[in-house]
Length: 81
Image (cartoon, rainbow, N blue to C red):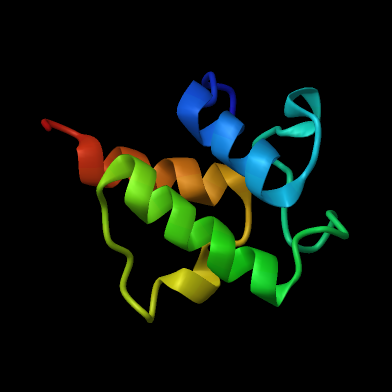
């Protein structure tokens, strides 16, 4: 993903997972980030839903396992908003 990451998303991921903002890149995922375990994933989803005023389906939540995927999902929901 070459586009700039949403600053609010970077802030949310950084704060929720307890990682430095500079480490938050599109390729950051639950597979390569120790702090991104199953509980942290649910906390992250809840934070994003609240901050961005969006809702992810229970089928979609397990697929949102990277910052890039989260940004794409947010972009799809906020397009034209």
